[in-house]
Every structure is written in C-alpha cells, then in structure tokens.
Length: 189
Image 1 (tube, rainbow, N blue to C red):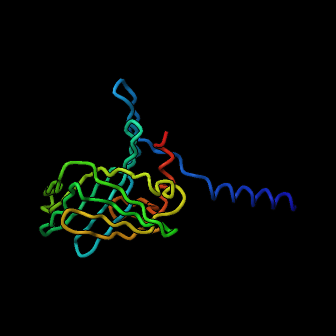
Image 2 (cartoon, one colour):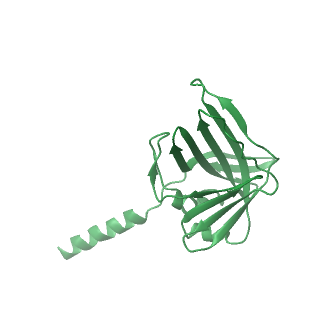
Image 3 (cartoon, rainbow, N blue to C red):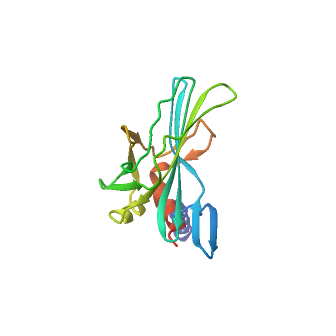
C-alpha cells in the first residue's frame, strides 16, 4: 500500500511540473540563415465599456538574435488614440523575484494601422519587434513576469499580468506570467 501511495505521489508531482510542448509557427533554414518563431499567444486582455485591448507575443530567433514580436489590437466604437513606437520605445518586464528585464524596440517609427470592421468599429493594430538585452535575460527563464510597462513615443502604459485568464476574444485559457519560462527554450537553439 505504501508503494502504491508513493508511486501515485511521484506521478502527480511529475505531471505537475511537466512543461508544455513547444508550438513553433515558422522554422526556416536556408542559405541566408535561420529563422524560428513560436505561435502567437495572448499575454494581456482588457475589456471595459465597449473598448478592448489585447496584446499578443511571439518569440523569434533570427540567426541567433532573440526577439519578442509584439502585436497590440485595440477595438472601440469611438476614435482610438495612436500609441506609436520609435527608437526610444522599450518594454520593461518586472519579474516575481523583483528584477526588471528591458527589451529594446528595433524597427522603424510606426503608429500602427487604423481599420474599420463590418460593425463600423475602429480597430488599431500595432506591431513591433523588441530585442532582448544581455542583462537579466536568464532571469526570464526562472521567474514569472508580474508586470509589463511599454514606453511608447508619447507616453508610458502599464499592463499588469495575470496568473491565468480565459480570453473573451477566443475563449482560450492563457497563463501570461509563465510565458517566457515555457517558451524561451523553444527558440534558443
């Protein structure tokens, strides 16, 4: 009986710490080099009074350079103010252990695209690539992210991370705090 109890406890422990398999979206290797990216995952969702903001991340490795591909989708029946990215834009990630990891924007100046949908709602889509710095990069593999701050060209906006949420957009469950812990290993090699 003791052996059966021990085996059940061991199986439960192993199952609890098992990592999710990598979901790779693109994996290309040719004469120009290599490019690998994970599937996009929602890491933030806010919906209030007919306005919504969704932020998605995917990780990429281009010839050994690791980056976060960020996509922000804002929806509203009213006009949506543009949040622009420029050379001074950054993402700051506060970790559960108190450390802060900074990502640096690496693209051209952009304010995204404003699109009207079939319901006559405004949709603003902003896409940007942010590069990792060497400092504290390893910490992302060890500690959950609890808070994100994005420095746009005109203002800075804070986004608190949740341990888990079910999205109103696609009804899927997301765990943004563990995003880097679960996905960095997928693109490092």
